[in-house]
Length: 156
Image 1: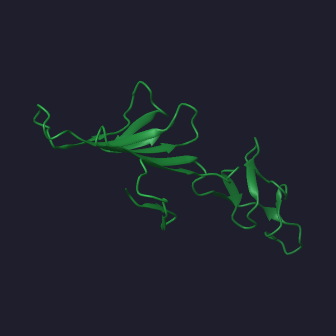
Image 2: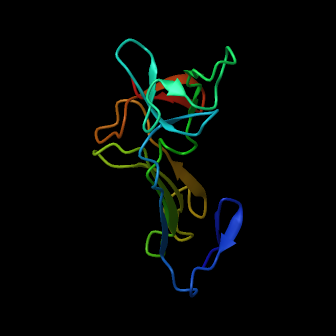
Image 3: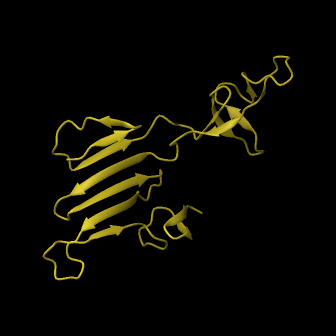
């Protein structure tokens, strides 16, 4: 019914009868890694970084030329904040919904585009509607704070 792209490549959806496509994003047990050695990092209470296999010293950083190692250089792991993305179509509602989960146990953000039926008794008949998350939503995923029209800060 629709094509799917992951990492810029079109993915074969097996047949044309799909009502939904889901991508589970995994393999990232850490949100930071060292940009020098690539080791998974965790931050200590005092703001230093420890490598999963290398400890506090980065094996690829030798600031004084004495092979003592220097500190790790943290970088955020791409998409480590996202654990699920999906698209669902619903013919009975004439809608397409996008789901994005940020690892919050309360669920996922959803964005839906729906067409009002042509024969609806409304000035909106045949028009498209966009439903998006909003601040103070009763079943919100993470808190939203408006930055400007159409842009929100996610979380506290």
